[in-house]
Image 1 (cartoon, chains in turn cyan, green):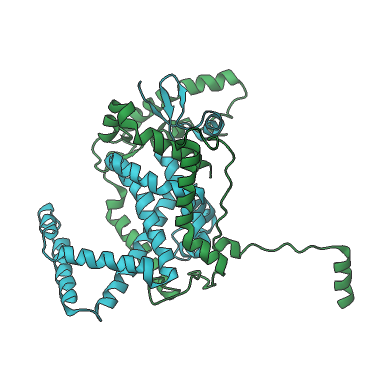
Image 2 (image 1 turned 120 degrees about the vertical axis):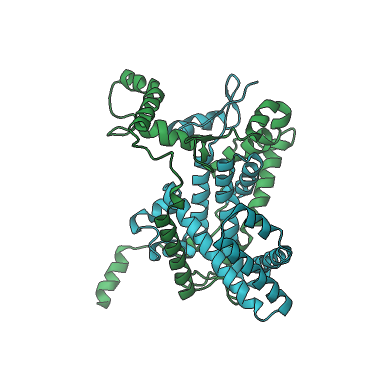
Length: 209
Length: 222
Protein backbone atom coordinates (compact mmCIF):
# COMPACT_ATOMS: atom_id res chain seq x y z
CA UNK A 1 0.00 0.00 0.00
CA UNK A 2 1.37 3.35 -0.94
CA UNK A 3 1.45 5.82 1.87
CA UNK A 4 1.12 9.50 1.25
CA UNK A 5 1.82 12.13 3.82
CA UNK A 6 -0.54 14.97 3.20
CA UNK A 7 -1.34 18.11 5.06
CA UNK A 8 -4.75 19.64 4.95
CA UNK A 9 -5.16 23.40 5.36
CA UNK A 10 -6.95 24.46 8.58
CA UNK A 11 -10.47 25.21 7.31
CA UNK A 12 -10.71 21.74 5.84
CA UNK A 13 -8.68 19.85 8.38
CA UNK A 14 -11.06 20.57 11.20
CA UNK A 15 -14.07 19.38 9.28
CA UNK A 16 -12.55 16.36 7.61
CA UNK A 17 -10.51 15.01 10.47
CA UNK A 18 -13.24 15.17 13.01
CA UNK A 19 -15.13 12.57 11.08
CA UNK A 20 -12.35 10.54 9.60
CA UNK A 21 -9.94 10.58 12.48
CA UNK A 22 -6.37 11.38 11.81
CA UNK A 23 -4.29 8.38 11.03
CA UNK A 24 -7.22 6.59 9.51
CA UNK A 25 -7.31 5.98 5.82
CA UNK A 26 -9.03 8.93 4.17
CA UNK A 27 -8.85 7.66 0.65
CA UNK A 28 -7.70 4.54 -1.12
CA UNK A 29 -4.16 4.07 0.14
CA UNK A 30 -3.84 7.57 1.53
CA UNK A 31 -3.36 8.31 5.18
CA UNK A 32 -3.50 11.71 6.74
CA UNK A 33 -1.16 13.00 9.37
CA UNK A 34 -0.77 16.40 10.85
CA UNK A 35 2.14 18.37 9.42
CA UNK A 36 5.20 19.29 11.45
CA UNK A 37 4.75 23.03 11.00
CA UNK A 38 1.30 23.00 12.57
CA UNK A 39 2.58 20.65 15.28
CA UNK A 40 5.25 23.20 16.18
CA UNK A 41 2.58 25.91 16.33
CA UNK A 42 0.71 23.76 18.86
CA UNK A 43 3.90 23.23 20.84
CA UNK A 44 4.33 27.02 21.00
CA UNK A 45 0.76 27.35 22.24
CA UNK A 46 1.41 24.74 24.95
CA UNK A 47 4.49 26.65 26.09
CA UNK A 48 2.50 29.87 26.09
CA UNK A 49 -0.23 28.35 28.19
CA UNK A 50 2.03 26.81 30.79
CA UNK A 51 4.51 29.66 31.17
CA UNK A 52 2.66 32.72 29.80
CA UNK A 53 1.60 34.30 33.05
CA UNK A 54 4.54 33.14 35.11
CA UNK A 55 6.69 35.87 33.64
CA UNK A 56 7.15 34.77 30.01
CA UNK A 57 4.88 37.46 28.58
CA UNK A 58 6.50 40.22 30.62
CA UNK A 59 10.00 39.08 29.69
CA UNK A 60 9.15 39.11 25.98
CA UNK A 61 7.58 42.55 26.15
CA UNK A 62 10.03 44.25 28.49
CA UNK A 63 13.09 43.05 26.61
CA UNK A 64 11.43 44.35 23.42
CA UNK A 65 11.63 41.05 21.58
CA UNK A 66 7.92 40.92 20.98
CA UNK A 67 5.77 44.00 20.49
CA UNK A 68 2.82 44.68 22.76
CA UNK A 69 0.35 44.03 19.98
CA UNK A 70 1.72 40.69 18.85
CA UNK A 71 2.26 39.09 22.23
CA UNK A 72 -1.09 37.31 22.22
CA UNK A 73 -0.27 35.81 18.82
CA UNK A 74 3.07 34.56 20.14
CA UNK A 75 1.48 33.05 23.25
CA UNK A 76 -1.23 31.32 21.18
CA UNK A 77 1.29 29.93 18.73
CA UNK A 78 -0.10 31.89 15.80
CA UNK A 79 2.95 33.99 15.01
CA UNK A 80 5.29 31.19 14.07
CA UNK A 81 8.48 33.03 13.13
CA UNK A 82 8.31 35.54 15.93
CA UNK A 83 7.33 32.86 18.46
CA UNK A 84 10.12 30.46 17.60
CA UNK A 85 12.66 33.26 17.69
CA UNK A 86 11.45 34.58 21.06
CA UNK A 87 11.56 31.12 22.63
CA UNK A 88 15.05 30.55 21.24
CA UNK A 89 16.22 33.80 22.84
CA UNK A 90 14.74 32.99 26.21
CA UNK A 91 16.12 29.44 26.07
CA UNK A 92 19.58 30.80 25.37
CA UNK A 93 19.27 33.42 28.12
CA UNK A 94 18.19 30.83 30.68
CA UNK A 95 21.06 28.56 29.74
CA UNK A 96 23.46 31.47 30.19
CA UNK A 97 22.03 32.20 33.62
CA UNK A 98 22.34 28.53 34.54
CA UNK A 99 25.94 28.49 33.32
CA UNK A 100 26.74 31.63 35.35
CA UNK A 101 25.30 29.95 38.42
CA UNK A 102 27.32 26.81 37.63
CA UNK A 103 30.51 28.87 37.47
CA UNK A 104 29.62 30.66 40.70
CA UNK A 105 29.14 27.40 42.58
CA UNK A 106 32.31 26.02 41.07
CA UNK A 107 34.30 28.61 43.02
CA UNK A 108 33.42 26.94 46.28
CA UNK A 109 33.88 23.37 45.09
CA UNK A 110 36.74 20.96 44.52
CA UNK A 111 39.82 22.77 43.05
CA UNK A 112 40.34 19.90 40.60
CA UNK A 113 36.95 20.58 39.08
CA UNK A 114 37.79 24.24 38.77
CA UNK A 115 41.02 23.48 36.94
CA UNK A 116 39.24 21.08 34.59
CA UNK A 117 36.60 23.66 33.63
CA UNK A 118 39.14 26.46 33.22
CA UNK A 119 41.33 24.38 30.92
CA UNK A 120 38.29 23.33 28.92
CA UNK A 121 37.14 26.93 28.51
CA UNK A 122 40.59 27.89 27.27
CA UNK A 123 40.29 25.26 24.56
CA UNK A 124 36.85 26.58 23.63
CA UNK A 125 38.41 30.04 23.27
CA UNK A 126 41.04 28.62 20.95
CA UNK A 127 38.30 27.08 18.84
CA UNK A 128 36.34 30.34 18.76
CA UNK A 129 39.39 32.22 17.51
CA UNK A 130 40.15 29.64 14.86
CA UNK A 131 36.87 28.23 13.64
CA UNK A 132 37.67 25.06 11.69
CA UNK A 133 36.27 21.57 11.57
CA UNK A 134 39.67 20.24 12.51
CA UNK A 135 39.93 22.24 15.74
CA UNK A 136 36.37 21.25 16.64
CA UNK A 137 37.35 17.58 16.35
CA UNK A 138 40.34 18.36 18.51
CA UNK A 139 38.06 19.87 21.17
CA UNK A 140 35.81 16.82 21.15
CA UNK A 141 38.79 14.58 21.85
CA UNK A 142 39.95 16.77 24.74
CA UNK A 143 40.42 14.61 27.88
CA UNK A 144 38.59 16.93 30.29
CA UNK A 145 35.46 17.13 28.12
CA UNK A 146 33.68 14.06 29.61
CA UNK A 147 34.36 15.33 33.12
CA UNK A 148 33.01 18.81 32.39
CA UNK A 149 29.96 17.37 30.63
CA UNK A 150 29.18 15.12 33.60
CA UNK A 151 29.50 18.03 36.03
CA UNK A 152 27.23 20.21 33.88
CA UNK A 153 24.66 17.42 33.56
CA UNK A 154 24.71 16.84 37.30
CA UNK A 155 24.23 20.54 37.91
CA UNK A 156 21.25 20.60 35.54
CA UNK A 157 19.74 17.63 37.35
CA UNK A 158 20.29 19.45 40.61
CA UNK A 159 18.37 22.44 39.23
CA UNK A 160 15.60 20.10 38.08
CA UNK A 161 15.22 18.16 41.26
CA UNK A 162 16.80 19.54 44.39
CA UNK A 163 17.54 23.25 44.04
CA UNK A 164 14.15 24.92 44.33
CA UNK A 165 10.63 24.74 42.97
CA UNK A 166 11.22 27.77 40.80
CA UNK A 167 14.34 26.36 39.17
CA UNK A 168 12.57 23.04 38.56
CA UNK A 169 9.72 24.93 36.87
CA UNK A 170 11.99 26.90 34.55
CA UNK A 171 14.15 23.88 33.81
CA UNK A 172 10.96 22.24 32.55
CA UNK A 173 10.69 25.21 30.16
CA UNK A 174 14.25 24.62 28.99
CA UNK A 175 13.55 20.91 28.51
CA UNK A 176 10.34 21.56 26.59
CA UNK A 177 11.89 24.11 24.23
CA UNK A 178 14.92 21.94 23.63
CA UNK A 179 13.12 18.61 23.40
CA UNK A 180 10.01 19.59 21.49
CA UNK A 181 10.38 22.83 19.51
CA UNK A 182 14.07 22.72 18.69
CA UNK A 183 13.91 18.92 18.35
CA UNK A 184 11.16 19.07 15.74
CA UNK A 185 12.93 21.88 13.91
CA UNK A 186 16.24 20.10 13.79
CA UNK A 187 14.60 16.84 12.75
CA UNK A 188 12.99 18.59 9.78
CA UNK A 189 16.12 20.48 8.82
CA UNK A 190 18.32 17.41 8.83
CA UNK A 191 15.69 14.85 7.87
CA UNK A 192 16.26 12.90 11.08
CA UNK A 193 13.24 10.62 11.40
CA UNK A 194 14.11 9.12 14.80
CA UNK A 195 14.59 12.55 16.37
CA UNK A 196 11.26 13.60 14.86
CA UNK A 197 9.47 10.64 16.47
CA UNK A 198 11.22 11.26 19.79
CA UNK A 199 10.11 14.91 19.85
CA UNK A 200 6.54 13.96 18.97
CA UNK A 201 6.55 11.41 21.79
CA UNK A 202 7.73 14.10 24.22
CA UNK A 203 5.01 16.43 23.06
CA UNK A 204 1.92 14.17 23.10
CA UNK A 205 1.40 14.06 26.90
CA UNK A 206 1.40 17.87 27.11
CA UNK A 207 -1.61 17.93 24.79
CA UNK A 208 -3.61 16.35 27.59
CA UNK A 209 -2.95 19.21 30.04
CA UNK B 1 -6.77 18.99 23.65
CA UNK B 2 -7.85 18.07 20.14
CA UNK B 3 -4.27 17.42 19.29
CA UNK B 4 -4.16 14.53 21.71
CA UNK B 5 -6.56 12.83 19.32
CA UNK B 6 -4.51 13.80 16.32
CA UNK B 7 -1.04 13.04 17.55
CA UNK B 8 -1.57 9.87 19.55
CA UNK B 9 -2.78 7.68 16.68
CA UNK B 10 -0.19 9.31 14.45
CA UNK B 11 2.56 8.30 16.77
CA UNK B 12 1.40 5.04 18.29
CA UNK B 13 0.02 2.68 15.66
CA UNK B 14 1.12 4.37 12.47
CA UNK B 15 4.62 5.53 12.99
CA UNK B 16 5.90 2.96 15.45
CA UNK B 17 4.60 0.05 13.38
CA UNK B 18 5.52 1.62 10.09
CA UNK B 19 8.34 -0.83 9.53
CA UNK B 20 5.98 -3.85 9.58
CA UNK B 21 3.22 -2.46 7.43
CA UNK B 22 4.94 -0.10 5.04
CA UNK B 23 8.65 -0.81 5.08
CA UNK B 24 9.27 1.19 1.92
CA UNK B 25 7.64 4.25 3.48
CA UNK B 26 9.69 3.91 6.61
CA UNK B 27 12.81 3.64 4.48
CA UNK B 28 11.88 6.85 2.66
CA UNK B 29 11.22 8.68 5.94
CA UNK B 30 14.49 7.47 7.42
CA UNK B 31 16.26 8.87 4.41
CA UNK B 32 14.69 12.20 5.30
CA UNK B 33 11.81 12.34 2.82
CA UNK B 34 9.48 13.97 5.30
CA UNK B 35 10.74 17.49 4.85
CA UNK B 36 11.40 19.62 1.82
CA UNK B 37 14.49 21.38 0.55
CA UNK B 38 13.39 24.51 -1.27
CA UNK B 39 16.70 26.09 -2.15
CA UNK B 40 19.31 23.76 -3.57
CA UNK B 41 22.41 25.41 -2.16
CA UNK B 42 21.28 26.02 1.38
CA UNK B 43 22.58 23.58 3.99
CA UNK B 44 20.44 22.84 7.08
CA UNK B 45 17.55 24.31 5.12
CA UNK B 46 14.83 21.68 4.91
CA UNK B 47 11.42 22.69 6.13
CA UNK B 48 8.31 20.65 7.00
CA UNK B 49 5.97 19.67 4.17
CA UNK B 50 3.03 21.72 5.43
CA UNK B 51 5.22 24.78 5.93
CA UNK B 52 6.31 24.44 2.32
CA UNK B 53 2.74 24.63 1.06
CA UNK B 54 2.15 27.57 3.39
CA UNK B 55 5.05 29.57 2.01
CA UNK B 56 4.57 28.64 -1.63
CA UNK B 57 1.08 27.73 -2.82
CA UNK B 58 -0.93 29.28 0.00
CA UNK B 59 1.10 32.47 -0.03
CA UNK B 60 0.87 32.89 -3.78
CA UNK B 61 -2.85 32.17 -3.74
CA UNK B 62 -3.60 34.99 -1.31
CA UNK B 63 -5.84 37.66 -2.80
CA UNK B 64 -7.34 40.73 -1.30
CA UNK B 65 -10.17 39.14 0.68
CA UNK B 66 -8.40 35.90 1.50
CA UNK B 67 -7.88 32.72 -0.46
CA UNK B 68 -11.50 31.84 -1.20
CA UNK B 69 -13.60 34.97 -0.86
CA UNK B 70 -12.41 36.85 -3.93
CA UNK B 71 -15.42 35.70 -5.91
CA UNK B 72 -18.96 34.66 -5.14
CA UNK B 73 -19.02 32.19 -8.02
CA UNK B 74 -18.13 28.73 -6.80
CA UNK B 75 -16.87 27.62 -10.19
CA UNK B 76 -14.44 30.52 -10.41
CA UNK B 77 -13.00 29.75 -7.02
CA UNK B 78 -12.68 26.09 -7.94
CA UNK B 79 -10.91 26.90 -11.20
CA UNK B 80 -8.61 29.24 -9.34
CA UNK B 81 -7.75 26.46 -6.91
CA UNK B 82 -7.18 23.76 -9.51
CA UNK B 83 -4.49 25.83 -11.15
CA UNK B 84 -3.02 27.27 -7.94
CA UNK B 85 0.01 25.01 -7.76
CA UNK B 86 0.99 25.69 -11.38
CA UNK B 87 0.63 29.42 -10.95
CA UNK B 88 2.75 29.21 -7.83
CA UNK B 89 5.44 27.24 -9.64
CA UNK B 90 5.49 29.75 -12.50
CA UNK B 91 5.70 32.64 -10.05
CA UNK B 92 8.62 30.92 -8.33
CA UNK B 93 10.44 30.53 -11.63
CA UNK B 94 9.75 34.13 -12.56
CA UNK B 95 11.16 35.30 -9.25
CA UNK B 96 14.26 33.21 -9.78
CA UNK B 97 14.72 34.62 -13.26
CA UNK B 98 14.58 38.23 -12.10
CA UNK B 99 16.49 37.23 -8.96
CA UNK B 100 13.97 38.87 -6.71
CA UNK B 101 14.07 35.92 -4.33
CA UNK B 102 16.91 35.48 -1.93
CA UNK B 103 16.20 31.84 -1.14
CA UNK B 104 19.51 30.75 -2.61
CA UNK B 105 21.61 32.88 -0.30
CA UNK B 106 22.78 31.93 3.15
CA UNK B 107 20.74 31.82 6.34
CA UNK B 108 19.70 35.20 7.64
CA UNK B 109 20.79 34.05 11.09
CA UNK B 110 24.40 34.00 9.88
CA UNK B 111 24.49 37.61 8.72
CA UNK B 112 26.58 39.81 10.96
CA UNK B 113 23.80 42.31 11.60
CA UNK B 114 21.47 39.53 12.68
CA UNK B 115 24.11 37.99 14.97
CA UNK B 116 24.50 41.38 16.63
CA UNK B 117 20.76 41.76 17.03
CA UNK B 118 20.40 38.27 18.49
CA UNK B 119 23.22 38.84 20.94
CA UNK B 120 21.62 42.10 22.04
CA UNK B 121 18.24 40.43 22.55
CA UNK B 122 19.67 37.58 24.61
CA UNK B 123 21.74 39.84 26.81
CA UNK B 124 18.78 42.14 27.38
CA UNK B 125 16.78 39.13 28.62
CA UNK B 126 19.66 38.03 30.85
CA UNK B 127 19.91 41.53 32.37
CA UNK B 128 16.17 41.69 32.80
CA UNK B 129 15.89 38.35 34.60
CA UNK B 130 18.85 39.18 36.82
CA UNK B 131 17.11 42.40 37.76
CA UNK B 132 13.87 40.56 38.54
CA UNK B 133 14.18 37.05 39.95
CA UNK B 134 16.89 34.69 38.83
CA UNK B 135 15.20 31.28 38.90
CA UNK B 136 18.49 29.41 39.23
CA UNK B 137 19.95 31.26 42.19
CA UNK B 138 19.37 30.14 45.77
CA UNK B 139 16.25 28.34 46.97
CA UNK B 140 13.04 30.02 46.08
CA UNK B 141 9.36 29.25 46.20
CA UNK B 142 7.35 29.05 43.04
CA UNK B 143 6.82 32.71 42.20
CA UNK B 144 6.16 34.64 39.04
CA UNK B 145 9.46 35.95 37.70
CA UNK B 146 8.07 39.33 36.77
CA UNK B 147 5.57 40.15 39.51
CA UNK B 148 7.13 38.01 42.28
CA UNK B 149 3.63 36.89 43.18
CA UNK B 150 3.68 33.59 44.99
CA UNK B 151 1.62 30.74 43.59
CA UNK B 152 -1.00 29.39 46.01
CA UNK B 153 -0.57 25.79 47.01
CA UNK B 154 -2.97 24.23 44.51
CA UNK B 155 -1.46 26.07 41.56
CA UNK B 156 2.05 25.19 42.72
CA UNK B 157 1.14 21.50 43.02
CA UNK B 158 -0.43 21.46 39.57
CA UNK B 159 2.59 23.12 38.01
CA UNK B 160 5.00 20.78 39.74
CA UNK B 161 3.19 17.53 39.07
CA UNK B 162 1.94 18.46 35.59
CA UNK B 163 4.32 16.24 33.72
CA UNK B 164 3.52 13.14 35.78
CA UNK B 165 -0.21 13.83 35.49
CA UNK B 166 -0.21 14.26 31.73
CA UNK B 167 1.97 11.19 31.25
CA UNK B 168 -0.58 9.19 33.23
CA UNK B 169 -3.43 10.58 31.13
CA UNK B 170 -1.60 9.67 27.97
CA UNK B 171 -0.97 6.13 29.19
CA UNK B 172 -4.65 5.73 30.10
CA UNK B 173 -5.81 7.15 26.79
CA UNK B 174 -3.59 4.78 24.88
CA UNK B 175 -4.59 1.75 26.88
CA UNK B 176 -8.34 2.35 27.06
CA UNK B 177 -8.94 3.49 23.52
CA UNK B 178 -6.28 1.86 21.42
CA UNK B 179 -4.47 -1.07 22.92
CA UNK B 180 -7.00 -3.15 24.83
CA UNK B 181 -9.26 -5.51 22.92
CA UNK B 182 -12.15 -5.13 23.27
CA UNK B 183 -11.86 -1.37 23.68
CA UNK B 184 -12.93 0.01 27.03
CA UNK B 185 -13.89 3.28 25.36
CA UNK B 186 -14.41 4.26 21.78
CA UNK B 187 -11.61 6.29 20.30
CA UNK B 188 -13.70 9.42 19.72
CA UNK B 189 -15.53 9.35 23.05
CA UNK B 190 -15.52 12.73 24.76
CA UNK B 191 -12.28 13.49 26.54
CA UNK B 192 -12.41 15.39 29.78
CA UNK B 193 -10.13 18.38 29.91
CA UNK B 194 -7.59 18.28 32.65
CA UNK B 195 -7.65 21.99 33.49
CA UNK B 196 -4.33 21.94 35.27
CA UNK B 197 -3.92 25.29 36.95
CA UNK B 198 -1.23 27.75 35.92
CA UNK B 199 -0.31 31.26 36.96
CA UNK B 200 -3.08 32.52 34.68
CA UNK B 201 -5.59 31.30 37.26
CA UNK B 202 -4.20 33.86 39.71
CA UNK B 203 -5.56 36.65 37.56
CA UNK B 204 -9.09 35.38 37.04
CA UNK B 205 -11.44 37.87 38.54
CA UNK B 206 -14.31 36.77 40.65
CA UNK B 207 -17.68 37.96 39.40
CA UNK B 208 -19.53 39.92 42.05
CA UNK B 209 -23.22 39.24 42.11
CA UNK B 210 -24.87 42.60 41.91
CA UNK B 211 -28.44 43.49 42.52
CA UNK B 212 -30.45 46.59 43.17
CA UNK B 213 -30.06 46.27 46.92
CA UNK B 214 -26.28 46.46 46.67
CA UNK B 215 -26.43 49.68 44.66
CA UNK B 216 -29.00 51.01 47.09
CA UNK B 217 -26.66 50.36 49.98
CA UNK B 218 -23.75 52.01 48.18
CA UNK B 219 -25.84 55.12 47.67
CA UNK B 220 -26.88 55.13 51.32
CA UNK B 221 -23.26 54.78 52.44
CA UNK B 222 -22.23 57.59 50.10
